[in-house]
Length: 241
Length: 276
Image 1 (cartoon, each protein chain N blue to C red):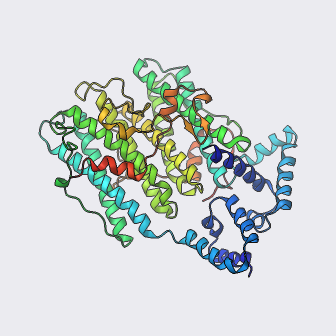
Image 2: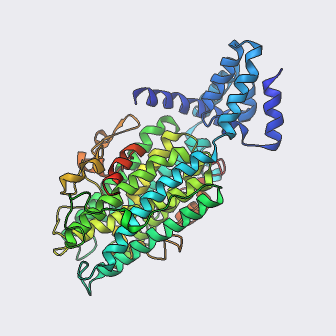
Image 3: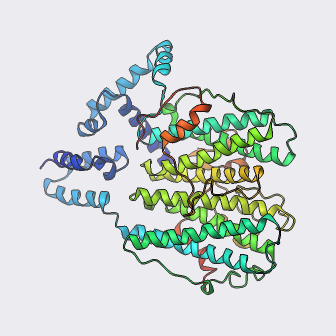
């Protein structure tokens, strides 16, 4: 596992270079060598030297760029986990009125899981990680059980469909398994939240079709839905499809 | 002979060739480095094996995975079918009845879906009838269809095993994106089932397992030591080299937040206890 991480660090570094290099990826592959690699790293270095004002303007205009390849998919997952973690953090900090000890305990567990997911992606992505996103929870009434659980249900079902749709876009078997390790936990959350709203709705026809299949959504579909809750503009145009 | 030109030609008809050849771009680079050190005569051989890797994931290996999944779905379907059909097992007039029916119907849908997929791929689906299964696991759970708590305990073991089994097979399906997606869409449904069965076990009638959670805490939180194999490794707290508790969560939360996979052999060892 140690080597795996080291290897991934190297890979992430290379991905970063490819992302910012003036060369197209395929031509990079064709002319791969010390020269091209150093140009790529130089370009990455230059970008970092941009003034913060320039970066801010760039962010407003183009949004946070998730990147391409597996880094892009990991950043996509990181974005969704940021959203979920921020939501449950608020839920646990200001619990809805009349919350039972059992429900608070379950929601605290979920908060911890989402926090673990978020911090894991941040650490795994290293310097390739996108910035912390600004969320918009104006539509949620945190004092009201129905509002909180309806939002939780929407986020969990969305998360499940996002990972289900992203699996085939992942190129590394290790990351595919990691996504798999997370999505089933999200599905456990989704089922629990649904049961809290109405017992027995853990896998009803809203989310599971006649073939017994859960939903799968493309990153574009997911980010369109999520955008109502995220202030920061997200640029997913380089994600694999 | 110019490999780059050949790849370029292929790229004109298959834009994803570089991705197919190796998902890891760094490995492509290593291939070029390797190529430059190789004798020219050896190149065609290397290319052959490269393309076999890219396109040659024989559908037979995918069919093997699908038949493995189908075996598990049969195991689950007949279990719920028999449980639902056993008088006085599931408390009448409670939400448990429709919950078990829902899960049974999903497992049947999975059986039919997988059978269809295997046949469509030119394979032969495995076939099981109810009497081929022994849900007492050769006497380990003699009350499986007479005690509601035992029935739910075995159900939890099946669902949590199913989740781990699908997860473990995902990499083997990477060459068939649509099959992979379908497997993932089944995988999360099994996790929803597991979550609900765990909640059912918390009720007084269901076994009063009040400490149980919808997610898996540590190694074998089921309260049933006979199913240790189902939860082997679930207490792992290191993901891709990252120590999860070091990120600021408890050890329990670290184990809960990532479900672990099981390799095929481990799953089959569990399933075989229930197959006559």
